[in-house]
Length: 433
Image 1 (cartoon, rainbow, N blue to C red):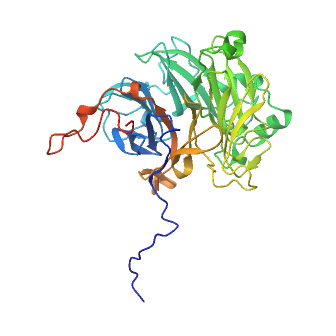
Image 2: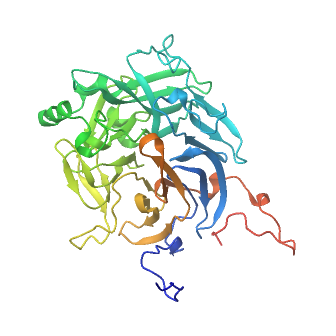
Image 3: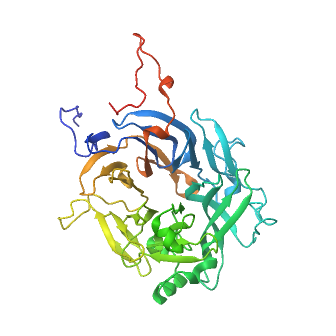
């Protein structure tokens, strides 16, 4: 048998990593925050694709910048019940759902479950907690609110025979104060009749909730977003879209929806004739909503599409007013296709930041569809799966990414060492010059 030697070429399976496109004149300058899927690190990049800061965190899928150099991250549960969560064998993160870290990586805040599984949020005496809900974990998304409270997206097991005889994995929102006290909650199954699902959708949900998407039995909606509506002219004229209402997303039902925060009612939903497995809808300053439309499979009945697109809609008319897909004039758009995960952010200069999540390719695209910045993640996360979590998969995929303006980040020039000539190795805002 011959022994292979290193050649001078490069295999096509050696996917490049790092910065691949940078059109300085057309980009929106800033830092980009991301974390590889199931990674213990959150990375901050400059426009040149260089890591200028990182945070060590509990293993996570999602880190969000909340200002003043702080990030908020969701923890991952290794057990079926979240109050048994233990990432290091120590008590620091046992039962912790969210953790806030300062610029230096110090843990400055956390939300932790109560030890009582019948009242895990210590909410029975304040906003009420029905012990029929068996809490599983926080997942996907969270928001630090303007009043300092924190909104958490979570799931619990519950049986609701008005929906299905099968036990459901039900999404709920929970708002907690800085001291961890619950002040507001919303359970999806309790508002099931407020969604404009068709009779066929309801029939299929009843028969096999979640199964035909290839996910676990009972995962009938699979929420992934907790966005707070900003103040807009639309919100001032139409109470459905007023500031403070909650915008959510149901990946398995191809639906995005809005909850009136004051009444708890579902006041708007859209998408089942247009979206497939969507993620991360968020409202723009003009009142439109932009959403990451994954493709893949989703819906009752199931719809299939083998490419991903970014979609901006007018929520009043339901009209799609802008779309981005890779090579739109070709028949087959599979080069941009992320079956799961995803985020989309409209930048102040009109460009859009998004990513090919499963491949870990972050990109900024103009309104006309030109890619003006692109970065391919080469850092790794690790997923343990299978029976007793005995199998391991290394992962370069990225769930979400965010562009952060330079002036929103503290001056960190002193963080970097000086070289032997006494000159700083990095400037205040690398990539600006």
